[in-house]
Each structure stands twice: as C-alpha cells, then as structure tokens.
Length: 567
Image (cartoon, rainbow, N blue to C red; front, side, top):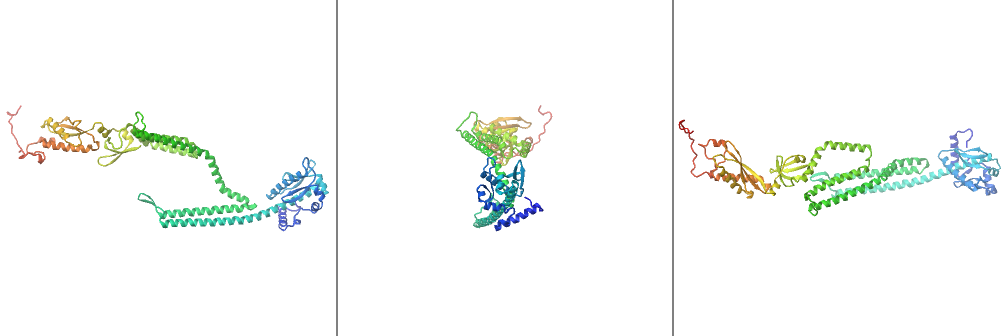
C-alpha cells in the first residue's frame, strides 16, 4: 500500500517509527491502516464473527473470512490465508513490500509479489456491508498493518533475545578464556619444574649434542605459546560469529565468518570421507604384503638353517635370496598401490614421477650394474666373508659384501673397496677354498749358479720346505726349473699349505729356511755379476757358516802361451 505524495523510502520510515512506537508502548491506535470501521466490526458484531473463521498472524487475529471457496470451508480458507500471511511477513522482514488488489475473471484478489493471498468473497463483503472492491481495500489495509505490527514485534523480540544471548555468549567466552589462561599457566609451570629438576633429556648422537635441555625447554614454551595464541584466536573468532548470529540484521555476516573457517574443514572432511575407500584398500594391500613377507622370511630362515632343503639351492643363498624377493614383493605392492595414492592421477604428480624416473635412469646405471653384479656374485659362490682372495691385483680377506661393493682387508691392514661390477669382470682367486680342497700352492723363486749341481739344489730346497712351519708334507713339495739363463738357472719351489690366512707369513718362513739350509750346506746364493769375478773376494756365506781357517784367495793372473792354449 502506498501513501499519496510520499516516496517509498519515506513511507517505510513512517511505518517503522509508528509500528515501533506501538510495539514498545502497547498502543495499537498508533498503527496505520487499522481503521475504525474494521475494529468495531470485529469487536461488536459477535454474531457475524461466530459465522466466520479467524485469520491469524502470530498470536493476533487479523480478520475474519466468511463463506466457502469452491470445496474449501471457511476454516480451511482461514488456515490457508494465515499460512500465506506468515510467508508475506517473512518477505516484508527481508525487504519486500508489495500488496495490491487485483480483479481477474470475476474475482477480487489481494496479491503480494505475484502470489494471491486471498480472494474476497461476496459473503466477506456482505459481512462488512461493503462492495467486494471496498472490502478488498479494507482487508488490504488491515493485513498491511497487521504484518508491520507482527514484523516489528518479532524484531523487538529477536533483539531482546539477541542481547540476552550475547550476554550469555560473552560470559561463556570469558569463562573459557579464564580456563585457558589457567591451563597454559599450569603448562608453563610444568615446563619450569621439569627443567629445574633436570628431567628434560639432552638429545645426542654419540658425542654430538644436538639439543640441550635448555633448548628443549625453550622449544616447548614456544609451542605452548603458539597453541595458546591459536586457542585465543579460535575463541574470539567463534564468539564474534555467535554474537553476530543472535541478531537478524547481522546473521548473514555470522554465516560468512563461520564459512571462512568451517568450509575448509568441511572440504577436508569430505575429501577424507571420499578417500576412505582408497585408504581401506591401501591398508588391506599393506597388511597382505606384510604377512606375505613374514611368511617368505620364515620360509627362507628354515632354508638357511637346513630345516628345509631344495636340490641345488645352497643354505647360504637363503638370506640374499630373501632380500631380492622382498624387493620384488615391495615393488609389486607399490605398483598396485600407486593409483590409489593421494594425487596420483594429477598432472603434477605424474610430472614429478616422470622426472624422478628420468633422473634415476640416467644417474643410476652404475649403481644398477653393481647391484646386478652383487646379486650374481651371491649365486656364483666366488667367495664368502672371511675368505682370503685375490681380485685383480689386490690380495686380502673379504670383510664385507654388499649389493654394491666388496671390501677387502689386505695383510697391511688396508681396506680396499671394489665395485661389484669390477669384481664380476675381474679374475677372482679364492685361496681359502683352495686350501680346503687340498691346499694352496705357494711358490718361491731361487737362482743358483751353474757351479752347483741342480740335483743338490733340488734336494736342499725340498729339505728347507719340509722343515718349514705351515707347509704340508703331503702333497710333497716339488721343484721346477723354469728357465736356463746366461749365468744361472731359475728354480721355483712349490709347497702346499692349508692355512690361506697365513700364506704370506708361510712364504716368508720358507725363504728363511732356504737361506739357512743353503748356508749350512756351503752353497752361496749370489748374483751373476758377483759370480763372474771370484778370485780375490771373500766367500759370501754368513760368518757362522764359514769353515774354520778359511782365508780369502788372492787375486791371480796367469799367463797362457798361445802354443799351450787349449783347443
């Protein structure tokens, strides 16, 4: 309804002031559109009211309707109009304000926003003593005034309730804040007591101190302060949102503020719920892989202990084979799980996976070749931990063997690391294995002049070998003449030993015994150049082995005539 000569804004302001005054002072006469002709009719014509049905808005009776509308009785009409008035009141509170009388197809309707609130029947007009058009205008004014009165009453009630709820909310917020303050004070006091009593540990890695007790206490205090600050922010945030929600004019801001905080949580929660089937599937695959690995480990331990045997499968192959099978099982499980990982189908995840795979393929060729070689060395049984071996030019004991490298410790206590690919491509001599299968052949070379019979040299060398500690009597030592040089033949003494770990020391003792035996027999071990000029020089035997009364021969020159020169 519009007032002549007034703008819509002025009309709404006048209505609001008058209605607010009426609601606060309980003065119904101050409300507009509550005409005197309607009020006496509702108050005095009890006979007419008894024949009609009341239309109610809130707890107030707005008007009475009379007569049926098609199959609808008076009561059904009144209930329907009451429901539509309630919707109209809500629209008016939200800013909509449109009421008008419309005549269509012989009916007189009161319409709001394109929706018919009621049809004015002839019985309604007769009850008021007016025409249907006049009765419709009268009803429109009455409805408009009742809706405004109800709206303002509701607003006053809401503001009153909002103030009361705000007081309660703020009081609860202060109580929660006090409890949080007390709780965090207790936590700070607990940290101080722990530090004073020395119960806070110091984090160390061997002799390196990573975190002292003071730093740990300071870190805990910092974390407590951050949690305290976060708790204050959350309490203040929700207090503000609740206070705004208590008043109709600010309720939408409360919803927006809560959405800023709750919407991310809702999205995260929804994502977790949507991802829950994948999590269950991943958990099942992990459990299955775990129990499969436990069964495989149990099986290979039995093979390693000899409880289970397979033809052609050595017990010492059990542990490395289990490691290889474990890698295969884990790789297969990862391939099955990969599509169900978070973000596995995103382009970013695929790009990172491709980049990592490319780096691995380009930069790990050497590592892969070493791992393959390490696996092959396991099954070739070329050597075991503790064996004395020669790999290339390096001789030593095997101290460790991994999937990538093999480490040898030489007799001079030097650790040499050799890549497994190099080991696989080199010649490997296992002295320990040869010692167990008949003995390792040790060799030493001696050069004696032609003036000493070779049979005597053989005899002396074999005698020295038989008297050397660590040399086996069977198989018997033997001598080989490997070359006949200009001034001397080369004799190679071959002996057997079963202790590969002391083979170098055994060769050293063998050389010592050769010297002793040759010196005792009066046989010199000299160089060819020294043997070429003998007269005038003292014998090269040790003093203990020089015969008593020995005198170095004089240097002699002898002239030989050409006629006497032997042919």
